[in-house]
Length: 155
Image (cartoon, rainbow, N blue to C red):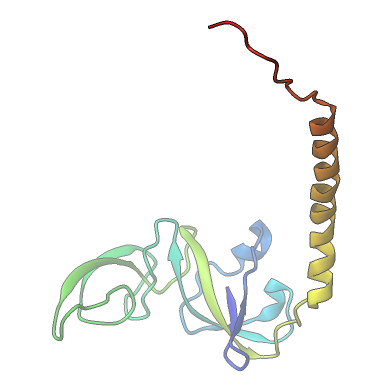
């Protein structure tokens, strides 16, 4: 996930095997080249999570999971002031178990979104298909003979 603090927009990119291998061993706070996600500029690693959703914390060393006593911050929302809880979190190093990496765009900018006209053009074929179905349904309804009501003489 790449987010741009200047515009408030974000962009999701999926990395394949080759490009994801370059991130292994890096830590939260390190800066990397944005060409890894096909952008111009520089990215700063701000966090991430593993496949079960355990968040990465900057203050936990290594790449493994640890149960730590948390009072606030990443991985814990306290319900009352001063509450502490032991929670399972990941360390600050990117390993193979990490599935999502959050980054912040430091230098450069995100590409512009596609104009709304192009998005509407993609929706039109589906609308046209629905419009074609409706006349066909109406034609079938007309073909069915109406049930004639006759005089019922049986009691």
